[in-house]
Amino acid sequence: MTPTKSNPIRARECANGQKPIISQAMFEEFTELQTMRKRCDALRTTLLQRLDDGADVESGRLALEIVTKSEQRLKKADLIRWFGAAEYARLLESAEPTAITYLKVVPRLARGMNGITPRCEVGV
Image (cartoon, rainbow, N blue to C red; front, side, top):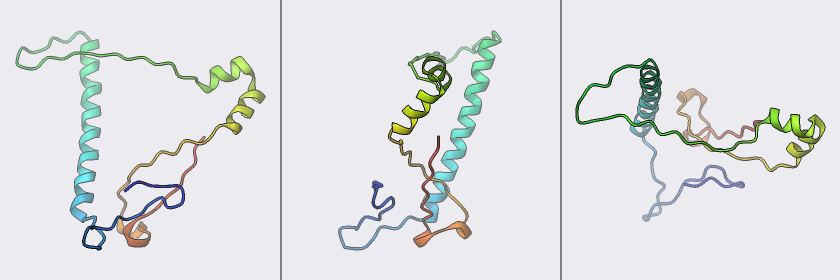
């Protein structure tokens, strides 16, 4: 299912003409995987901190490799410093917004039509 500007959430038809079902089990699995990702992020932070503190790495079949990537990003503070606040505001006004779609499992009480809560949030 791909969101579009005119229809952000649209259910597909199955081959037999019926709509597919999004089960509660799928919601549960999604929530569990999100929790695991948070635990993974926390463990990553711990591992990096221990390496930074000079910890030894236990011998075994697994090793740790740190990969650092860099990219250039224009930051608001840099743009204001280079071009001034008025020019920054003009550039920001002329820029097309970037839409980011994410799923958030919410309690049933906050549901919209068909158990789906469509949201459109604009951030600056």
